[in-house]
Length: 114
Length: 118
Image 1 (cartoon, rainbow over the protein chains, first blue to last red):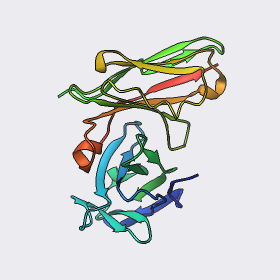
Image 2: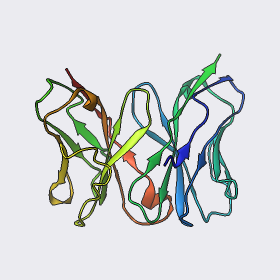
Image 3: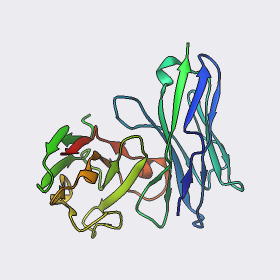
Image 4: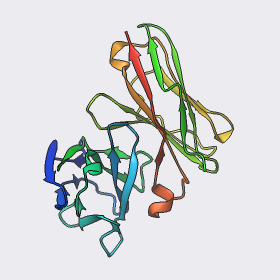
């Protein structure tokens, strides 16, 4: 069963604008971690942000913030003040406390327009 | 410090041949993961090593795939009798392996090995 769903195959945003990339997840484990990774065309996977299921505050890392809505099981990534270098694939991922694997969504390709 | 390294960066092989892909994790990281990423797709979990524990092989797609980790460090993913559908980028990642929190869960990825089976 698909555990991570990213419904936006592609997104466009104007430079300097904010953009939200959607992610919903499915788990019955009360303890889990949510991650966002960026994969530019070079192929490397770059960690962006982490949210623990018991964290009270939404995670923030510079221009990245995670809109964590636990009851809705959503973990949307918000990128503020988009830059041309933000153009890349973005993957949402989850690791449950009782599982060893990390489940990844299908990804969203973000294109920042000048 | 040095990140996760993988070799070779590219591998072209003929159908039916065996291939070995190598991963050198970050020093001190006890957890090591292998993933496969087909063109335009997300990452598919293959196998997980944690210290000296038995590996979690639940993601291996067939018995042609195997992996080992020697001395708790370097890992080798072996694909026997390669098929064209094995063509993908194979990514390795390592983490501290401590349960809970960002520090324990954050995975650092290598650059990947692009495997092409003709």
